[in-house]
Figure 1: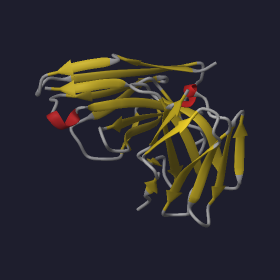
Figure 2 (figure 1 turned 30 degrees about the vertical axis):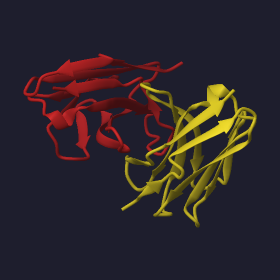
Figure 3 (figure 1 turned 90 degrees about the vertical axis):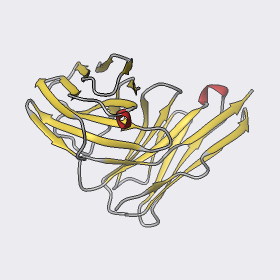
Amino acid sequence: KQEVTQIPAALSVPEGENLVLNCSFTDSAIYNLQWFRQDPGKGLTSLLLIQSSQREQTSGRLNASLDKSSGRSTLYIAASQPGDSATYLCAVQGGSEKLVFGKGMKLTVNP
Amino acid sequence: SQTIHQWPATLVQPVGSPLSLECTVEGTSNPNLYWYRQAAGRGLQLLFYSVGIGQISSEVPQNLSASRPQDRQFILSSKKLLLSDSGFYLCAWRWAGLNTGELFFGEGSRLTVL
């Protein structure tokens, strides 16, 4: 059974720091990994999707990497801003329609 | 561009009452559609998905059901709500035929059962 873990559960940093968010998964047989952002009381916003054949994806200040063999992904946020404050979730898709989600990491960027 | 709408945004219902949550997608045809639930302190759980009109797959046995009466409409229902049905319900879609493609979520419907 696939399990996805995000540690730590919460992180508070000053504005301007470069951040690394971690995601680990137990079964390396995945089709893809997706990073989402969730603001309080809102739905999920897709940030980046990495297919299993890819090593990384970039969008603006965000860069996500995938190492299937070690069961890890990282989301790198450059020059963090207060507007980046949100909960970040990673999810992996294996051999079905279902995405298995981590419980998320709550990020607070202080001005 | 594609958009996804969910309503109602917030719902407070007594135990034993019926439920209907609606989701529609605009700007695409024959999307794959999904209902997820996010309960406090837990990860998101896939409840149902649909790859076409009238085609519903259930991931977990529960007090809920889903229907897809039109191409871009997905409905989550219950005949009698339980306290344990409380949670944040999220509808999502993918491009047709891309079952490993990017998943896009709606704004969610928060259900409180009292």
